[in-house]
Length: 456
Image 1 (tube, helix red, strand yellow):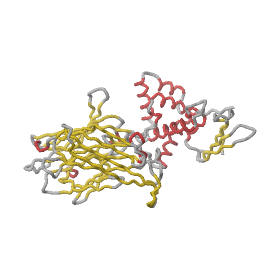
Image 2 (cartoon, rainbow, N blue to C red; image 1 turned 90 degrees about the horizontal axis):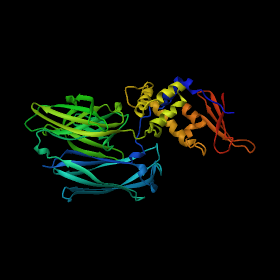
Image 3 (cartoon, one colour; image 1 turned 45 degrees about the horizontal axis):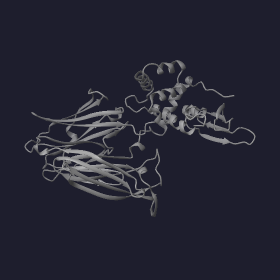
Image 4 (tube, rainbow, N blue to C red; image 1 turned 60 degrees about the horizontal axis):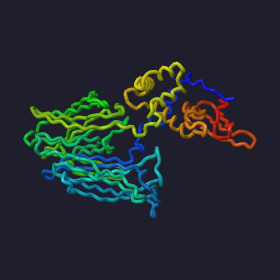
C-alpha cells in the first residue's frame, strides 16, 4: 500500500520552510552558469594619444572551458595547471590589419574539473589605440591542453570622431566594485559581455570630455527603459541626475590585473577636461529582458546623449522555470485542486500572468526581482527530475521520492537497505521535522514508492 500526502494543506508551512532554508545559509543569489562560458565586450575610453581613442577588450572565461592537469610543481592549494591563449586582430573598413594581440597565461586550479554549480573564472583586458573609423574584430580563445576554441569573427566597433564633438561621451559600461580616495577613483568592470546579472545590484560608469573653455559642471541625467520584445515601445523605469560627488575630473592612469579581476584606476586632476561619472542602477529590481540605458549631458544650449542596449540574464535559472506550463504543473504539489485549476486556465499569456502573480504574493523580498522562495522550490524540482528518474518515470519530480524532496528538501539522513528475500527499502529522516519517510521498490527497478510516514 502506498502513502499519500495532502500537500496543499501544508502550503503556509512549506513557504516558511523554503524561506528559512535560504535564510539560514544566506540568500542564494544567481551566479554565473555554464551557458556563459566565454564572454567579452569592448569599451571605448579617452586616449592620451592625439586623434586616437583607447579600445579595451575585456573578457571572462569560466574554468570549465579548460582542461587542467596536475602541475609538476603544485602551488599550495592549486595543484592543477592549465592555460589560455588569446588572439585578437583588428581590421579596418578596407580589411587592413590595424592592431594585433597574441598572449598566453597560465591558470591554476584547486580541482581538475569544474562542474555546475561550482565556478571559477579567469578574466583580463587587452588595450588598443585607434583613430576614428569602423573596425571588425577577430577574437579567439583557446585552451592550451585540449585545443578547445571559442572564436568570434564578426564583432563590429564604430569609433566616432570625438574631437569634432563639443561634448564627447565615450562608452557606458557596468561596474561591480568602487574604491576611491583623495587622489584616485578605482572601479572594477562587471565584465559580463553586454549583459548584467539578474538579481544583483550594479553600477554604471562613463567617461566624457568637455571643451577646454568650459569648467562648470554640466547636468548629467541617466534614464533606463524596458524594451518590449517585438515592439518599439519604451517603458521608462528609472531616471536619475548624477550628483556632483559622483563626478570626477580624472584620467585613466593604470590597470591592475589579476587572474580573477580587473581594476581601472583614474587619477584626479585639474589640468585635463576628461571627467568620469559613476551612477547607480536598480539592477536587483530588473526582470529578465532587454533594456536601454541612456546618459545625457547638458550645459546651457549644448546637449549630447549616449545610449547602450543590454540584457538582464539569469544564467543559472532553474531549468524547470524555462517552461511555464511545466512550472505550473509542479505547483500541483502545493496547491489545492481548485487553486491549481484556476492557475492553469486561460491562454498561454494568462497562465504566465497567473503564475507570476502566485509567486509574487509569496515573495519575501517583493521589492526585488529575485524571489528566493520560488527559486529554491524549482531548484528542488530540477534536482528531483534528474536524481529520481526511473525507467518507468523519466521525470523524477513525478516520483514519490521526488515529491518528498521538493516539499521538504534534502533529508538529514538517507540510507538504503538491500535484502535477498524482500524488496529494497530506502529511509529518509528529517530531524528538524521529526519525520521519517520509508520507500520500497517492489519492482526492483528503482521505482521506490512511499509506504510509510512516521514520527521519529
